Image (cartoon, rainbow, N blue to C red):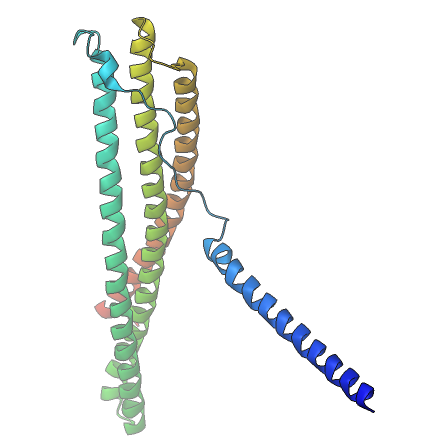
Length: 250
């Protein structure tokens, strides 16, 4: 009897322990998997810093004339940095405009509901002098709400476009930086300046890799621009319908 009781308790404890371990494993897997799910993995990767940079101090011995190409590359790099800052600012502005559009949609829905109630009241009165303008106001309010919907779609499409523009601007920034480093490395090579472990080839390959990334990012941005333009055209059409309805026609 004692052995049977011990055996039963042991089996019960083992089952409980196994269940607990299984639950813990599932929970732990969920926690570990969450960052991976959040990261997605399907979108384009952000560019990182350059792997190879050339210390300009090694070129101090060269004349200003010999460094003319380097100065041109520095100018292009500065322009690319400015373009990236502008892309950031444009994206931030469009995101704020989206919030404004959401507020406008909420107001348009209220006005549509109000116009609908007024239309019902007018119809109940049987007075055509009240029914006709109420019907027109209800139609205008409906079209205005639809236009507000299209405006939000257009804003969202523009944000997607500007996100890709910002990514391209960052890729191009690193591309221009890579060209600057290559120009400095070429100056060193052409003037027989060879710091420790210097290899011009790695700077050339770095430019090629960064150029390909920038070109790919631009292609994606161009495709998103087309989508944004299509969404904007739909919004403009909806807005024109509102204006036409307000002008007199039902």
